[in-house]
Picture (cartoon, rainbow, N blue to C red):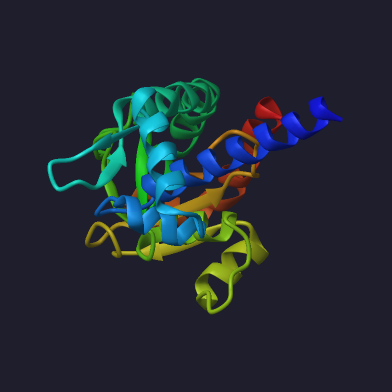
Length: 228
């Protein structure tokens, strides 16, 4: 019985610590000890111990204002996860970029933003639209934002565009991130341990955008199968 109680207590502590880490990582302005205590509905001393333990592992860091934010240790963990996703996606993206003659990117959710984890341009196209890895934009904008919202599952009050993207398997927008540019994005099927992600194509050519959905959906299916 003692062993069972200890395991249960340990699991509860771990779950509470992981929840604390999620809350801190998702708070743009960071969280103070009392903020976390209120969110977890625990005593301030428990919240303080949780934050101190997370800080010991560099998963959070205490700023000069006394608030805790995501630390370098968390970034290192994330880079490993992102590396796995990127390594699986890039061969598929290169094939897709060459087939369609347009730039293809892999975007993931970070907070309330879509972030480019990888960007692949076709080698032989005379002219392409491109942007840098690490570029980000709000989730409420562009085909990638719509696709990522769709991949997160149905939510109360979601837009009609998100519901439509979930139903048809892709999102298409025009001029929402880059003026004059078409975007087409397909959400990736959820995979345990990996961030919510999508494949996105961007082009100035309407004909490419119109022909892209089927190829993007097929590529996303191949990628999902390789990650499963």
